[in-house]
Every structure is written in C-alpha cells, then in structure tokens.
Image (tube, rainbow, N blue to C red; front, side, top):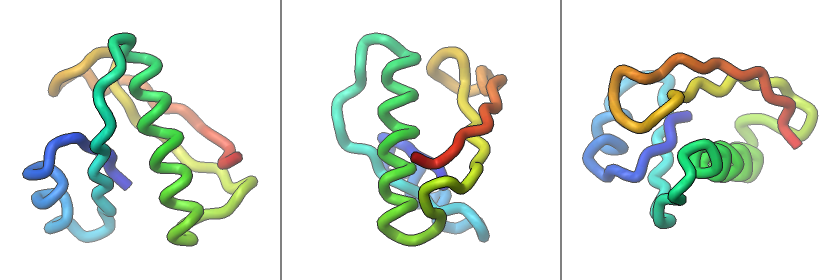
Length: 81
C-alpha cells in the first residue's frame, strides 16, 4: 500500500504490480510526524476494511523523516490495531 495526496502519483503507482495506491485527501498537518501517523492510520483502516490484513497482523511501514523525495530513511514494525 502506498498513501499519497497526489492523484497523478496514485495513478502511476497503480501501474506497478503489488502496489495498492491510496489517495489521501485530508489537508496536511503542520507537524510532519503527526501527518505521517495520520496517513499510516488511514492506510491501516483501509487495509482492514479491504481485508488485506486484520488486527494483530504485523506490517512494515516505510516513511521519511521530512517531506520530499530522497528522505525515506525510516522503517517501523507495526502491529495492526
């Protein structure tokens, strides 16, 4: 799953096998870390509704420490609530 606010990015991600794009339309939060957490929570809810995973499953979340390309440097192991 890949969460993005950019419609063009979501359409392009749809071309790659194994990537499920999620268009996130809520306004950006001023605090980057909080914004990332909101998008991750949104993706977890979508994933549970679509039955990609269930509560208790373990997933890996890959994010960046700041907005923009080239800053992806964080990998977290998350238990689906």
